[in-house]
Image (cartoon, rainbow, N blue to C red; front, side, top):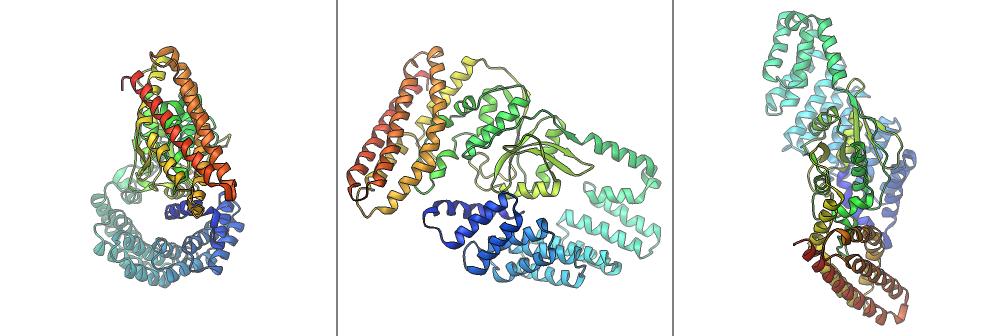
Length: 568
């Protein structure tokens, strides 16, 4: 689903409206749950119900797009999918899915209905509506050419291919494919072999680094490049050489929050390299145990933001070099994934909807299948390359707290540069904790001491009885932010106990951290009590605010101690 990443903002908005959701939002959440479970017919029914009952909902176009996709790809109903793609393009012209809906409609008209005239009409509509998108128009015109070719309209196919190369000469990939199609059409029309061979030669000269050039060479045969049998053997050997599945990548469990889930996947990659570390160790090394933020509008931020490049900082601390890549498209970015696999390195990518970190473990070129390890699975999952790239695109470039805004971010461990001992790792963890605890802002929200102070101010604003919205926000932050963070933060106490034996000035740091967590739990308790107090809530909100300010002071004291002990 190339364009489903746009749905992420909608999903986050729904998470914040959980207490006052509309029927459309409830239908959407149900559909998303069914989709995540692979219950495609039930998901389709819910998406359809949303569109029929509330066509003006902000979720309607998203639901319609996913309904069409399920019909086409999961339930083998392309005719019904075409109706829904047309409805999306016609009824929601401003939708971010409108362009892709038209392209998918063309694909069905071409491959299933085999109606070149319909493909041409949809293409003309596409270019009227998206005239500035030359790449999109070029892909659409290529569909028209293929529609003619596949229905034996070879003369028309050659003409459309020529039209494409004339109008969109700057679109190299589409022009190369159009030139190849034109040569094949001329061959089917019975043109002189020398004329057809000249067309293939022009493809090779003009587009040397494209798949079309490779195909043109194959068409010319051994008379220009070697005997056909030898060429095929070489190609097969190359496919075998460039196919690899890495064994021994262990499973990893799903976790609550992106940072923890990313660390669990990284732990699996490290174990494959013989570096067996507990999740708590990685939490301490990353600084996640000491990272606290307060944003009443984004309670989930507390478990999804980090102040460093997460994978890179942990890999460096453990003595690994690494490779980080991104790309403008899934197809282009996959080439670096492929290269890492050939070197024996599993690759971490953010995948699917709901998005999650998975380890890409293999690619079989002959079968065009990608193998990967998602959370909570004992063996590798497999998908066609096209399906894998589509699901990769769903999760890419959507504001990940780990990957940032980079499109098609990927990470892999490479050479082992050093093997830090336990003392060195503890010192690194303390430096990271000191830095994180002194941070004042992360992800656009107050962090550290200022997070607790901001919470205190927010709780003071909850005292008036009419402050119901603020009270709701405080409760959500406790449930979705504070309590999950407290379970993670316990790893920090264990690390600080180790630090007391290795670093001067750290003798009581673990006790101070444990005290901070105890008092932070009391903040959560007081907020819960205030929320349940009804008419007698005001003094309880005041007590919760005072408790938050007390925790801010404890946080500041521990941050100073860690900074002094780490030389910061």
